[in-house]
Structures are given as C-alpha cells and as structure tokens.
Length: 305
Ligand code: GLN
Image (cartoon, rainbow, N blue to C red; front, side, top):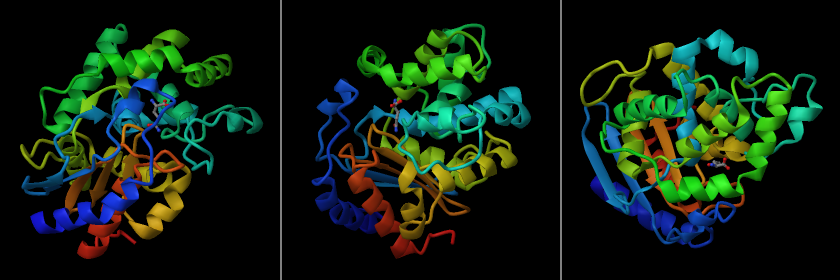
C-alpha cells in the first residue's frame, strides 16, 4: 500500500501543476500549489500515507457532510429535507440561479453552498459558540483527532469577502428556508469551513463512512447506518459539484471535495481515503487530488459501480 500511494502521488503531481489555489477567499491563495498528499485508513484502523499528508488545510466543503449528519441527528431527516432537496444541480457550487428559477426556493441539495448554509441553521445549540463546539467535537470523533480547531485567518478572510454566500443566505431567509438570524448562520458556516484538518483526518472520516458509521479505531458507532448511507449517496451524486458525473465514471467512490484542496473518499467496506492538493481545477476540485484517487481506485479496483 505504501508503494501504491507513492506511485499515486507521482501520477497526480503533473496534474496539480496545472491547477491553482482558490483566490476568491484571499487567505486560501497563499497555499502552496505544489503540495499533494494522501492517506488511507483500513476498516481495521491500519494507516498509510504519502506526500504532504501532514500539512494542515481548511475543510471548506468537506465539512458539509459532517454538518449534514449532525443536523439530521439533531432535527431528523424529515425536517431537514422539508427545507433542502436531494437532486444534483449541474451548476457550480456557489450558484444562486436555481434558488429563484425553481418553483420552490428550496436549495437543490445539501452539498452546494445554498443547501449547506441552510443545513447549518438546523444544527442544535444555544448560540453560535455552542453549535460550533458541538460540530467540532463531532468532527473530532469522525477524524479521531482531539486537536482539531478552526483557522482564524481563513475564517476572517471568508467573513470579509463572502458576499455571495451572504446573498444566498438572505435569499433563503426571505423564502423561509433557514432558521434563526442570517448573520448567525453565516458566522457558523464560515467558521465551519475554516476547520483545519490534514489528509489523515479526512481518511479517518472516510473510513467511518466506509464502515457504515463505525469508528475503525474504537469500534464505536459514531453515525447511524442509515445516515451514513444517505450521506454517501449525496457524495456520489453531488459531492464533486458539476464534476460529479465524470468523477463517478473515472473514480467511482462516494467523495466530497473542498476548495481548501481536500477530498474525502469512502470505499465501502474497504477503506477511507483522504487527499490534499490545494491547486484546484476549473470546477473547484483538487486537480492533483482527483488524479490520485483515480490511480488508487483503478489499481485496487475500488469503484462501487
Ligand atoms: N467556504 C467555501 C464557500 O462557501 C466552501 C466552498 C467549497 O469548498 N467548494 O465558498
């Protein structure tokens, strides 16, 4: 496995050189585009890694799957999906257009920004701090890492430039989709996106999903099986935004990307994979990371299809 991961990084590197770190959140543009790392966690909790697997980066949209699981555990599936849909969009992750052109203003799914901002507003807690602490302690369990916290500089950077997310949230408040105050929801969302992890943390989270919600290290059930299944389904249909179709053909694993350069993937019953490469392609997915996953999936015949 170690050799396979070294080969996967070498395969992915030339593609990483073609991408660029996200610039619309200014702090993210400082990331080193040459970084590329991968980590794997098996169902028995064995771990392997290669490349820049210890470099920390912000979860960005990879956090959306954790927030969704917590919101469903807090409020129930029925409530959450009375406000957010289950269909892929074919539009970019931050697109606003369907909110107004669809008959109901319900965001199409919980993986695009609009849906994820709505989901954030359903997380239980007395105030933002309480909700954030609950979310972070859940993510710590999923990643089996007690040190996880959020990056203040990245949070501030998005908070001062997140005009489009503010527009999405205000539109949804008007349409009665989100609970609570718009600014509170955004403050939680921006902090959630800035939660810092490394490739190993994402691999661990992928392994929990691959094991239907069970921690590969402690054996504890962290997520009910039906919720793990639901989230993996969204990862397949919407996890890579408007690149989800091609990714399903080429990699064939439930996966979720983020503009911080991370991708979390789950090979059901086999392993979790975390990749990190901040140079992004035109759809906002890690350019090298996708290739690393493609290499591993084809060599180990992991596609679920
Ligand atoms: N924080 C980012 C945003 O809302 C997350 C987007 C992403 O990772 N695709 O724009």
